[in-house]
Length: 324
Image (cartoon, rainbow, N blue to C red; front, side, top):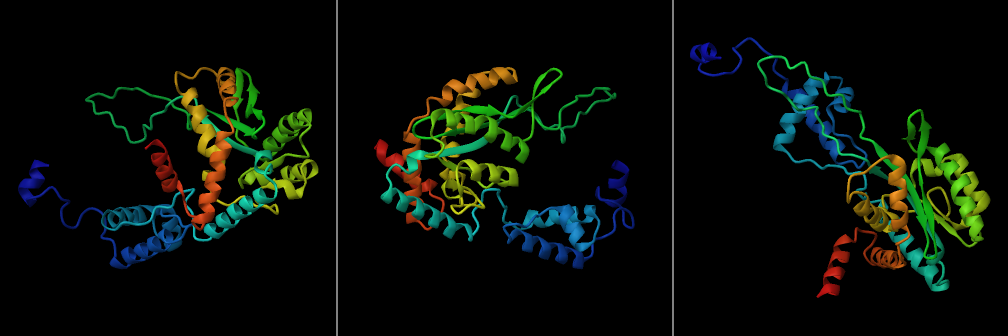
């Protein structure tokens, strides 16, 4: 490096060596592709996708992207970001919800709100970009799983009762092992966990079943089972007459209240084995009160009054006013 600096006056690569210069047309093509992707709700802004679109090496696309993104801000698409088409659907659903309350005051209290959540059993550190500087090779390896261990939990509750949580797991040689949630396993949960629990309470006919539009929730066996026991008209879900609005976890009491409440208890101390963890959260689930459902009704009112937009800022104002 000293010799290079004394000869050329800088640490840059000497003329005629190193990587070839990138053509200005390639830069313009990548910028155009990036702009189109960032303006679309379904677009992907990554080097591999742009390299396939423009038929250029991934390394070239990545280098151009790095230079462009340092100078120009682009839209980052989030999973639950509302798109313009979602707003009228959310507004219509909220107004329909409130209209049914006017006809039948007991209707919202008979809804069985359901959802799944992941509880990670331990923290993990991403060592992909970690570097160890040493004179000698330390010959040290740190094996890590691709994904951190987690527990996938399903729960459902109404104003009158709570269905005990169900943990998606398989029995392996060394004990329970968390498994992915697919349509088959979700149908097994409904058939052998939820339906018997409702039949035991003699409330299948009066229960309005709610679930979001996740792909596993609309698998063909799942829809057939729900139609058989609940009927097509008292199911709130995508692909049914009463469709749950897309990208709306802020309307589901499980999402905006239950899971956060349970994780406060679950992560209050070190998490032990899978079975112990499942037993530890069950008592806390039964502490959920009807105040959560009253809060959900307030959210539907705000959604209907504000054209389907996000309403968290209105909720913060209402909380501030209530404490003042």
